[in-house]
Amino acid sequence: MPDCSENRKHYPKGLVQPENGFRFSVDSLLLSCFAVPGNKARILDLGTGCGVIPIGLFLHNQDKNIHLCGLESNPEMLEAVRTNIKNLGFEDVFRVIEGDVREKTLLEPESFDLVVSNPPFREKGRGRECVDKGKQCARFEEKASLEDFVRTAAYAAKGRGRVCFVFLAERVLELVEFFRKYRLEPKRIRFCHGRSGDHSKIVLVEAVKNGKNGLVIESPLILYRDDDMSSSPNPHSLDFCPFLEKKSSCNP
Image 1 (cartoon, rainbow, N blue to C red):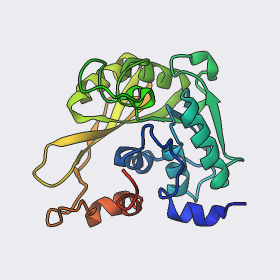
Image 2: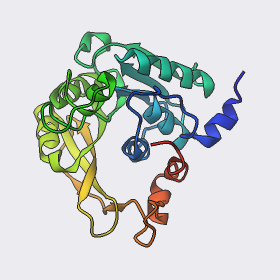
Image 3: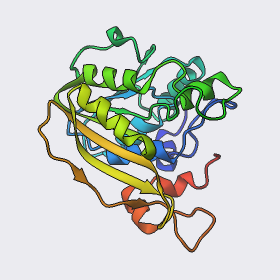
Image 4: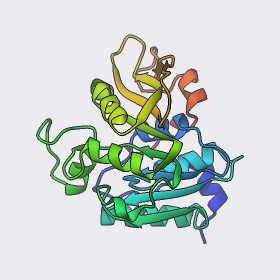
């Protein structure tokens, strides 16, 4: 039997991922710390991959009694997330649904307190395509579009429930437009920058279903030290997301 407590302590190191497929990056870790679940929250991750976001959410909120659900269609990712659930001892709190994000019937409507997602960043045909089909679907809107992810998030979230996405900063207006189209009112936005002076490449956005107007632009998150070109996290980013310290020693 795996030592679950030891595996949890070293997260995200040691997470099983497809050897040649898509591998998670810092954006997933950032989302797991940006989203703030309430006690006894039911959490859904759309396109859960190897389960990195729900597991991070649980470990970052160990004082709360939360339950996790991941929706995934890639067979290799499904095998990986199920192995990670077993290795970290999450069988009682993390269930996986096999299926496409466009298949809303797989989910009970308005049944989750928090919905999170790290959807494909790039539109199909815009950027260098990947040979591996799994990587292609994870990076590009090959099957499901950004609107598909937002539509299903709105369907699954309870009234006044929260929806949190991590996405490309250059497409933030598109994300906000889709959120508002499906009655998800943006409440918090935080832009992430590699180093001070860099343009933001990643943005974290939280919305409330059927929420009122009122948006907070949070202070920029600077991920890496300016004086260290080895991409060492700076102290402020580690305060926000302590998982970054271990991610820096993970395989890319």
